[in-house]
Length: 200
Image (cartoon, rainbow, N blue to C red; front, side):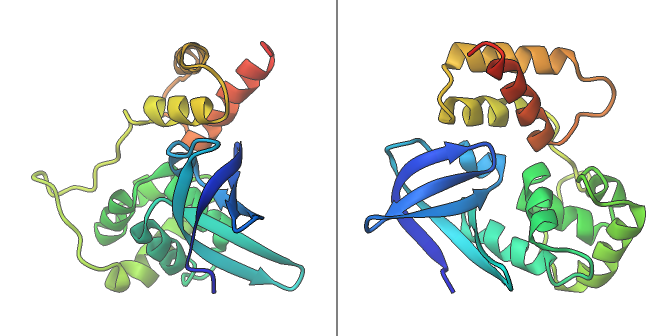
């Protein structure tokens, strides 16, 4: 089991990074929030979880051990694989996920692509007693942070090589196109990359 990797960031893509450790480049799948904190050429340390399949070995990377632990816990629920678990963490912070499960807030959980009402109810049923202590806010509700996406998308775009001005412009265009509920961060990031791809 590879519990963590520490090395220089050799490359970044919309869904992962290459961390060079001892002359070996390790491909690590990461959510946008984790990617936003990485810079090519800079040292990094990621908590990791190795998922072994018959035809593949996939390394998932996280900004901290709390994200990694929640990623692994989510997969103990029926019907949740590594990609869906990572999608949960791409949309919500670990604290928000814990609150949503503890408070049976299926509305927050269904904001994750791939999780419907029944899937959210199953997550609550199977993980509520195992989610650990949850810090409840003054209102006692599991609030979802909707205002954080511009910063996450902007940082991810800069990390992928675009200038801050280009990132700001793309975020502004994407924000103008949002109608109703804000889509998950990975969806917004892909929209911004598509926009910027046309200008390269």
